[in-house]
Structure formats: C-alpha cells, structure tokens
Amino acid sequence: MNQSMQPLSSSVRQPAGLREILLALLPRIRFNSPFFIRLRHWEYWPFAVVYFPIFIYHLWLSIKARSLFFFSAANPSIETGGLLGESKIDILDLISDEFKPKTLFVPADTHINDVFAQIDAHGLTFPLIAKPNVGERGWRVEKLEHWEDLVNYCQGSPVDFLIQEYVDEPLELGVFYYRFPGQVQGVISSIVQKAFLTIRGNGQNCIEELIMQNERAILQLPALTAKYGHRFHEIPAPGEVITLVPIGNHSKGTTFLDANHLITPGLTRVFDRISAPIDGFYYGRYDLRTRSMADLYAGRHIRVMELNGAGAEPAHIYQPGFSIWEAWNVLVSHWRVLYDISRENHRRGVAYMTLSEVVRIWRRIQRNK
Image 1 (tube, one colour):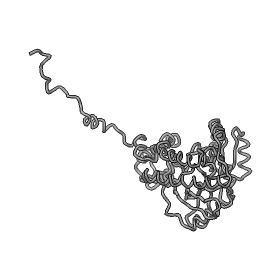
Image 2 (tube, rainbow, N blue to C red):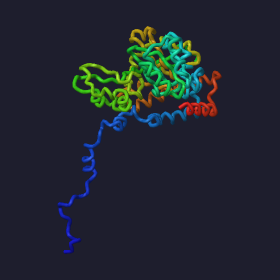
Image 3 (tube, rainbow, N blue to C red):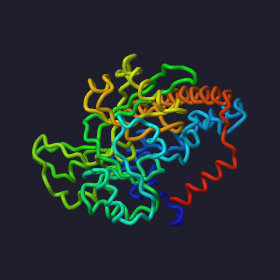
Image 4 (cartoon, rainbow, N blue to C red):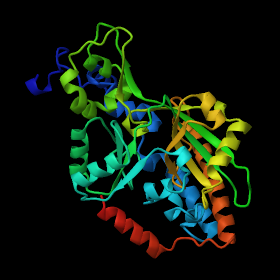
C-alpha cells in the first residue's frame, strides 16, 4: 500500500473540539478582571447601552413636544433645564444658605495666592472638596487634605472650579424630588443611600490583598494604586475599616443602595420647604449629607452639596441586584414626568432651547474640557 494512503495512526492528535478548547482556556480566564466584573453587572455598562431605550423614548416624547430639547423648560432657572453644561455655582446660589455648605467659585487661572486669600476670608479649613463648576459623574472631584493638595489641584485644573467645605456627616443621600408648576406639594420619587468604598481588616491580609477581594475596589485599582500604593504591604488590624474613596460617586466605587423605604409624607414636606424658595426649579435630585435620619425628617443639619436638574437620575436603580428591566421602567416613568412638567412650563410661556443655543453650549463645554 502506498505510504500516503495508510490510515492515520491512533497516536496522531485529532483537532480539538469547541468543548475541549473552552475547557483548556477556562483556567486562564480571570473572572474577577474588570471586563468580567462590568459584564456581569449592568450598573457598570456604558451609558449609551443602558440608556439606548431611553433615547428611543426621548425621540417619541420629542415628536409629541415638537422639540428635541423640551427638557430645557423643566427648570427655567437652570441653563438647559439642568441636562447639559449647567453651572453648579449658579444652582447652589438658588438654595438657601441654611441648607448648603460654604462654597467658593474659582475661575480658571486664578493665582494660588488669591485662592488662599478667599479661603481665609471665608473661614474655610481643611479638609475641603474641589470640583469643576461644570462636570458630571465625579469628574475631577477630589478631597483636599492639605495645602499641597490645593496647590496641585489649582495648578492642574484647566477649568473653573469650586472649593467647598467638607461636610463631615455620616449619611449621604440622593433625594429625587419633583413638583408640577402651580402646585405647592411635590413628590419624592427616589432616595439613594451612598456607601463609600471601604475595606475591613482581618489581621491577616494586607491592603492590596483586601482590595483584590473587593470587586468595586478592583475597578478603581489604578486610582487606588496611585493613592495607597506605598501602603499596600500594610496589614490592617481586625475590624479596622479604611475608607478608600471618601467621594460619594458611583463612578468612584461608591455603592448605591435603594432607600425608598425612607420616603414619608413628612419628608416630602421637608423638601417642599427646601424647594419652595428656589424659583424655577421643579425636577431634580438633591445630593446631600445629614447627621442622622432624625435630623433629615426634622429638616435640620442638611447640607446640599449639589442639586442636579433634568439630567438627574433616580439613582436607587443602581442598587446591586436591581434588574435592568426595573431600571428601564423607573427611568421611563421619570422621563414621562420630565416631559409633563416641561410641557406645562412651556404652556405657561417658557421657551424650549433652540438648536443654535445647544450648539453654542456644546462648543463651550468642549472648549473647557
């Protein structure tokens, strides 16, 4: 028989099937890698993916309103209604001093000596919070512990920014509130409680190992390495809690918890009182800190760090385990409220933004990045 025609020996390896390939690769796959963590939890999915159904719904509402920018009429006292490019300091200026921390506006390129003088003049002390006057999702929000931190922030900031006293209260909440024009009483539709990114020592693992056991911390690893890399070898004592990120922002590792059980008629009246003096505000979320739940219900020791308008989210949807279908349902219902409030304000004479105004604002945002 021709050698080329001989049957293959059983010792020759057959092509591997798909099952064998997957089994061979499985041990090499790191399921705690950032990619798989984000894949398994929709709260980390890209904004465009999560909001795609909302974009479609927005188009439908825009057809009904005959304007893509109907949302701009929701809060007449806030530029764009609070969805794009709004000034944080302009919004804070609308809120009673009773309910907000001391806040300084610092134009870009302000000399550091002038910043020092403003801080002294207003009696501010460290720690402080610094944040861009226009920005979202935690961009460049930092806690400044020392003068050196302030100098570095000022020198590294290309945009106008705010310096805010640090509100050292244990409870941080996001309270979503809306009220229809002409009505005295509003609605609290969402409360999110924020749990900062922390690790707890066990007396055995070092800081680096504890971070690698926490999926939220893994997603913040580059920033945590820059801040704590020199301490990674330290072993915290049993029960010792280290707050890795003291900023209550989801993009910085904070866990958002559904706290809608806190909503009561009495609490709604508290936010009616806070909101009533804010002329032209009807829809948005208060990001605040308070001393205790008793203080919150009594309307005292409340400090509003930010008030977000039409672009605000009912952030309780980011509770771990909250389904994407539930989240879409909540978002759609809030966009319907946004539409109804905007239409009513428009009927009362509030104009919608024009395309040229949107282009102007967009160009301004791009210049300031």
